[in-house]
Image 1 (cartoon, one colour):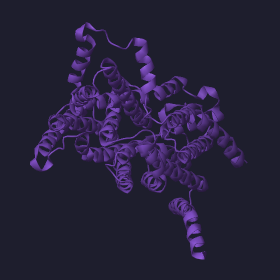
Image 2 (cartoon, helix red, strand yellow):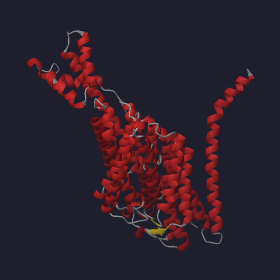
Image 3 (cartoon, helix red, strand yellow):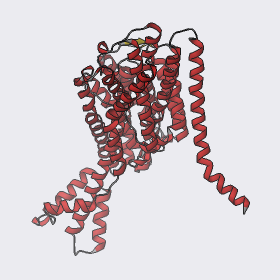
Image 4 (cartoon, one colour):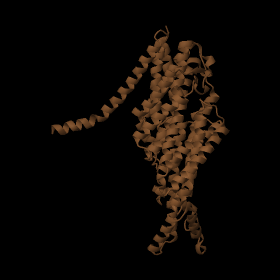
Length: 523
């Protein structure tokens, strides 16, 4: 009995031990930052402030890794193209690589130009403002990660800078037109991402899984879709991933992407056509062809994310470093190597320690993802950013990815509801006839291609001059009757609510922290 009780106690405390370990590693990382920064600037004035800011920057970077990175690898994990451990390893390596290789040498200190630095009184006020903004964004991201809500780290830091800026200089310090564009991204990003993901999935179904010979359709069409994805990701990488290292215009980027796409098309066509790679004539067989594209997409999305979003952690930290060491308020600041390293290591560590919760949320707790659907989400992420960047539309990578997941889920709901309606119409049309005959008709309809299904329904409605047995109002009733929810509504409401409160909540928190910090540091 005693042994059983001991085993029960161990099982009950296992989660607690893992949580203590994760927190312990995070504390050691922050302590390491403190010791390192103290050692490189022992004689500098206001070094205590810089040490505190560096630790907050490391904390922010860990929260970016825990929350934001899940959008890049979550679909691949949910579709089982990658294991959780494999996804974390790939994302950590490529996030850190993107931050260190392509994070840039200079960063904008005022994210998105949301406030006017000329209206900030002095360097001390600027330092307090940035510390408050960084800490507020980090605390909100930590809270969102805890409740399982993927939110935009960019919106978090924008809200923090705006709130602390208003506290420091009043409402006139904010560029409200710029804020309006950011608010517009709450709608633009998920709608664009969801629409492109849903359209891609619909095209895949029309051209492959809705055909009689699925294997033959896959051999012809999978190389084309993979090539389009390669073009999109190569262009995306040139525009966003390497944009801070090499200044590349849209046309050279698109041209480079096209070359990569053609190479990938030829390679994929050869791989799919090999006798050893015979495609099973089923949806599962086609699904397996998207494994490697998903792995590559997770790696490239992570690299581009590390190159761009590391600025959310190191931008304010670089600004504080500049103000502490040089004095004054700068709109642009050089990024010291140690600041970039704090961001890169923090993102990788935060992902490894606290990322699994959000990866599971994105990958499996919103809607069921197979590899084909995850492929559509990944491709939507790259194409949406390319389109938005050229149209000057403000978008959030988090909102795009989650919108893509919503898009494929809601499309599946629509298609399944519509299919059940059609089955009901066929059965109603053959009411009273021999059941075996009805079953044969239903089987023929199920195995028919998309075009053949249309012909069957068309002939059904006009057969022998008989009208369609179901009226328009009846169809609406059937749609409600056969609606099958494939997207978890509670997850949708939770995530959308978190998106809407990100900027105002992080702004309010930053304003409170600004007044607290100023009160503590004023003589």
